[in-house]
Length: 212
Ligand code: CO
Image (tube, rainbow, N blue to C red; front, side, top):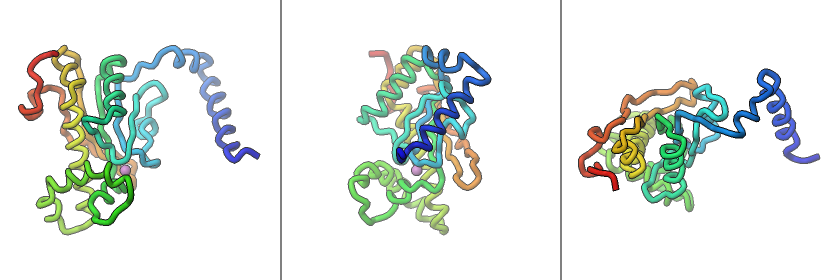
């Protein structure tokens, strides 16, 4: 038997379930996606974007990587943001980290984990930037939780610093960038309340004054 037979069976069941209530479901989705949201989240298998926010296929555009990091030279992430903003015209970009993130924990340690340490360096930089505050927290679990939050704050800023988002604002396109942290223990999202929808809300050094 095919080792993935159960997955293929799940798929057949799912596909027929979708069309049971709505016979044109796939026909409609195959010709157009119209999401209002771009989700940038962690690759962690316990943080599936659609399920957490109760959205169907076609309703949220998704990019995930280890530690939900937005790096300004990462063509993969930039291409996703570009497509989401300029073609799909999403109205919201959500950076969603999660408590208990292994990437964040690894970034706070001094031992080697292999190649991934070079990626996690971006999170280590966030930790280092706030190290005095973070290390002042007594409980180690709370310290990690705080870095999960600070990492999201940093990545929200990184999204806003991209030429893609700034050009959207300069064109007058409505676009808000949000920072959330998901809790693995209770399934609930903590909205960090750091929404940015205007270049006036980012540091002047990173602000673009005009369209190219
Ligand atoms: Co994670």
